[in-house]
Length: 267
Image (cartoon, rainbow, N blue to C red; front, side, top):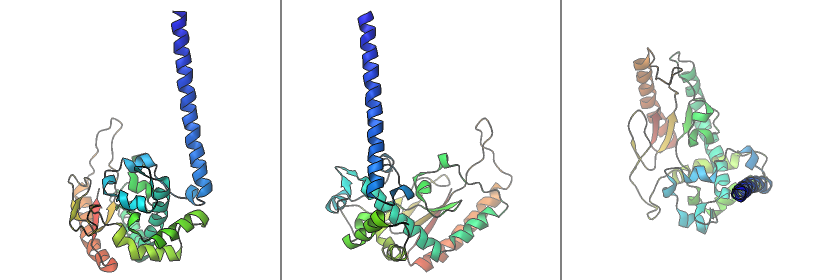
């Protein structure tokens, strides 16, 4: 019995030491990333695991990623996600500059209809990655930076390694010029794929949207009581009608400004 207990203690201690070792290794890896990529500590970068769990992961062109050094074995690399974060920051900045997203966010906030921003723990991957700094609006597209040219990727890499801020006029301009190619959801085996894509559920349905469209989402947290029961608001119908009106107006307006189809998902 004593020998058996001793075996259990040794096993537990070994597992604990391994767990501590893995934790230290992860911290060392993160520190190495921050040292190699000057901007990494200032960017909103998802973990590789979070990116791999994204339902759109199969749409990445892994062959193209490998050709451009953006993978780590069979997975997207941390390097890819850092580069993607730089691109997203500049695309967010570009969209804020040419569209009235800030004013629209303020309009929602001051509407008197009780829109509620989500708590950080309840935000999805795209909300957490957003650099727009808005309460309700964020870019919903995935960004396939492997479709950028090598010289464009080099601009992102240089900024990542040497820059003091993620957004520059040059990169913002590049994001505006290339976003139609980067946001496009396609079959990796058919670069010219044209069709539609089924997005995750919004307003109780899964919208099918053209794969080249720029997709924004307006987020609104639901209210619940202490027992977790949904609390409908008295102005629910008015709120829905208000959002539908905004969606119709802004989709048309933004599409004309950007020169590609813009869809707004309502949550």
